[in-house]
Length: 92
Image (cartoon, rainbow, N blue to C red; front, side, top):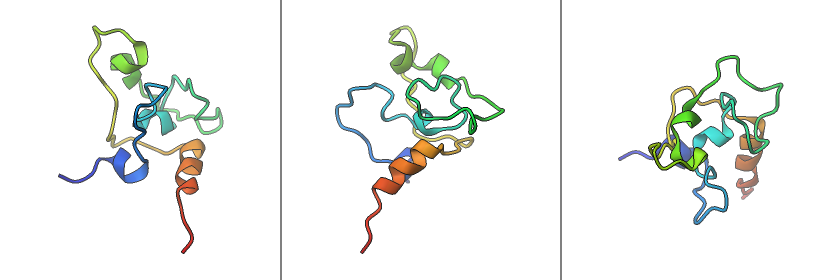
C-alpha cells in the first residue's frame, strides 16, 4: 500500500499532546478552524474546508467519527507546514 500524503510530507508524532498533531488539516490553507496558529490570514484559502466538523478528535465528542485526515486531494501546505518540513532536511 502506498504511503498516505501525511506520511509522505510529515512525520507522525507518537503520543501527541494535541490530538490534531497527526492530521493533514493542521498544515492546510483550507482549514477554517486554524486553532494552532498554523495558517496566516494572508494564506487562508477562499475555498474553506469543514472536515473538522466530522472529526471526533477535534471536538472531543465521541458521537462523531474519528476523522484525522491522512490524504486529501485539496491539500495546500501552509507556510507553517513548509517550515516544519524544512526543519527535517539534512544537508549531506
